[in-house]
Image 1 (spheres, helix red, strand yellow):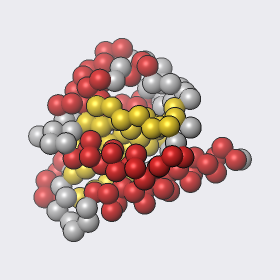
Image 2 (cartoon, one colour):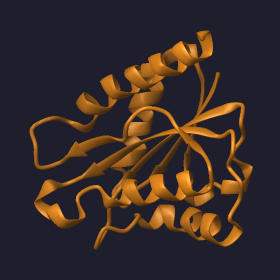
Image 3 (cartoon, helix red, strand yellow):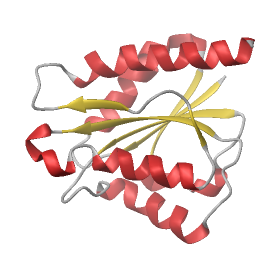
Image 4 (cartoon, helix red, strand yellow):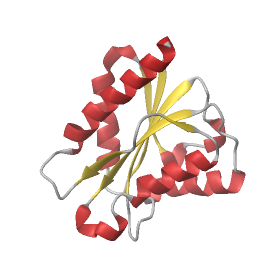
Length: 153
């Protein structure tokens, strides 16, 4: 199965987490990592499963590398029916009012365009003691199990 690992980041943490996820998925999946700055939402394919990893920037916005994707999805309004995805957010509970709003915003944009979300949105809190990969890797394992179970049904 093809897996697109797409990140939005200001400091590179989302990109590094995508690399960790790619390593975790190992040789079982055909993975490709890309910045959301380089992704046109109208090219999202039904034969690929997408994992979006994004931080939150400023007042609950998407980071700068995700802004071209946001502008394109809002401007083009592509029909993403049949596209499946999961989303993981990096945030900091110190900013409680906007905690993980970037991933929430991206998730809603994809759902509004009729993409299908698998599992629940994964969330990391930088003010906690866990490293992002300590939360994300078990989350990804659960998402992939749900995909395999759905495929077998």
